[in-house]
Amino acid sequence: MFLDLKMFLPDFFMEKVEDIHLERLKALGFKAIILDLDNTLVGWRSKNMSESVKRWIKNAQKLEFKLCIVSNCLLRGRVRFFSDMLGIPFVFKAIKPRRKAFCDAVKILNVTNDKVVVVGDQVFTDVFGGNRMGFLTILVPPLDKREFYATILQRTAEKILLSGFRKQGLLQKLSETSECRLSKRPKLDLQSD
Ligand SMILES: [Mg+2]
Image (cartoon, rainbow, N blue to C red; front, side, top):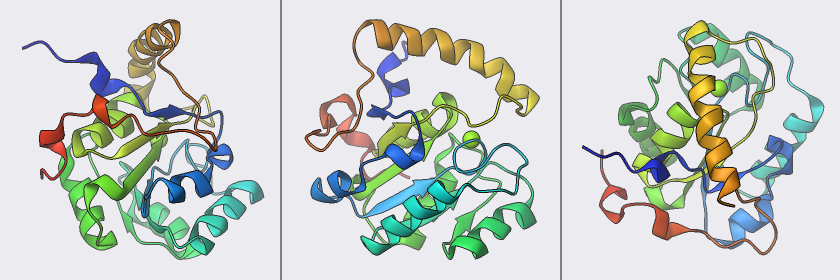
């Protein structure tokens, strides 16, 4: 079956998490943000989160966004460390792009899928998985070049896809005037699990 390549297209592409315009997401009616951990909020295997990322998360909390970390990381202790530090819930061993962990997060957050934003550094897990759920998807570049070996292989395919999207002018930045491109997502996926 032909797979629509737009399922891999993020709604927005930002140079870093801290550049994500929270007020605009709020104005667009979003209520919750699902955050990838490794290479999105912190470098791979790193325990150091930058002050600017911490500030952005605090700002999101101040704006009353509900937050949840959803990570493919298999180490509960590692994900829990950041969850405790930031005071937000988490789902680990997520096996993104499968829907199960995202569904668990939506239950924790107690919101509908169309009010959720997912932020991550990988097209085939965070963006594809988020698009399948009907979330708004925001892609950021990985913080660290070091990665899980399977991820390194995926990066080549990812680069090809992203350069195609870029050439077609489909990679948009979220700004204070951005609108959602809801049309890109199949409506059937909005409440699926
Ligand atoms: Mg990641």
